Image (cartoon, rainbow, N blue to C red; front, top):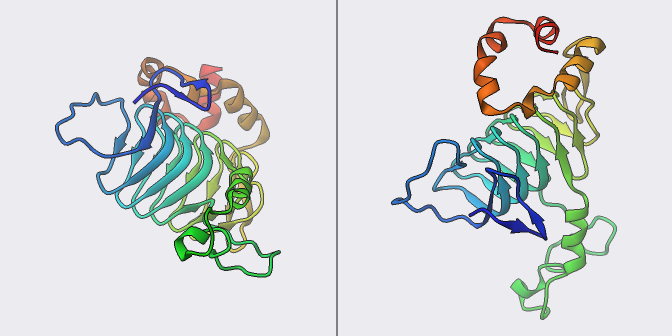
Length: 228
């Protein structure tokens, strides 16, 4: 369903999903989001050519065109750029608890479920929303990685399998470990700057198709030289 969210008009090709329920009779064009019937997608904006795998939960998340998140993953309160590759068993902005308060247990903020109050704690959930996760374009997040609340991951970065990311990740940087630490940069700075200036992730579908042979055959430096 295309339309508006919080007063803003969605870009062409993007869809807003309130509570996703698959319609087996629906005929969808190939560029529309492909959401597994086993997935849970609530209050999300999904771009064209996106994919959401089985038993994956998305909540209040915006995912840019061509990005995918595969099975048994979860993501909440996040903005994911275009062309991101998110492996299975990943956790992006996972559930949190108020370590500064007398009780950690969620009876204090999910009080309705325990018949302890007439309303849940709206301030706590707003605190989680305010600790938004932002992921740039063409980011690869490996199997079983966790990206904690408030973290920003730069365009072109790689997060190693099993990593726990508690601090911001610079563009085109590979990180790994618990807690994650920088391992190396993918490219020299001039190539990084060239890719950012080129911004191929914003190219229309037709131009991507025209340049497909170069994406396959050329290293990043040669690609920048040819297309910038």
